[in-house]
Figure (cartoon, one colour):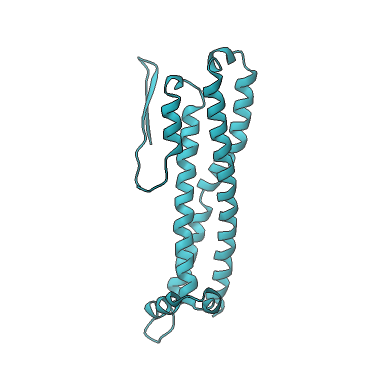
Length: 193
């Protein structure tokens, strides 16, 4: 995402690029197309930022989950629980010269994932919910509501989109907490073996 403000025209223009292609539709872009004529809503750009950060958090959680799964497979402690043929292969692939997993490397991976999960992105996404709730309330109470709310459909559509983002963000933040617990448990396993 890149934004630029022109002081002469008093307009903000932006570019939203995609780095991953998938089957999932981009709900925000669809909403932008529907609200094209109402692009002056004061919360449109912050909502765009919220959407982008929420997607970044989702990708971050997916990557961390994959890395933690690999560590669990390499330690072999959960082989009976995971009941996966991949576990045995992953454990033999990661063995050091003496036939055991490289616990220093596993420890380093876990510390890296812990750092990834605790950097500020999740806090940033978590703070958006309260900020948007207050912002929508302020707009609805303001003297500018006639200008902003002249098209109540656009305002309501944006507000509903934020509510969906909030629901998804809560789920992602709960998932993050579960992943931090997994990292903590795997650190204990790696350090005790």
